[in-house]
Length: 104
Image (cartoon, rainbow, N blue to C red):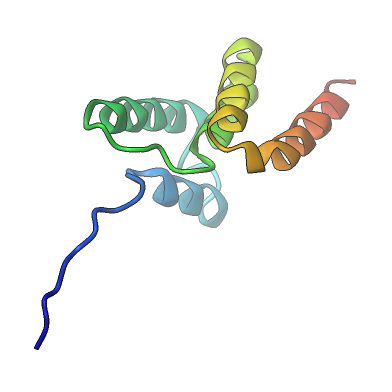
């Protein structure tokens, strides 16, 4: 027998994975307003607990803000994703390029 040590999780995922799953498996069930509220609550709780927000959360939040027509909040969330996870810049920039193309 040996000693078992448990490492704390690297990120606090909250409802993010479930929201993304519902969005694609049951369209309409996780509408953007609900997702923004739940993700914002998760982010606040995660920060209050001193844990890390996982990659993708701010990008998804940005997209939900965009769908709701809140461009300022969307750009802020996308910028936060890129700042926290520089490796996501290519992905986020591709999202922004597609969204810019949809506005025209």
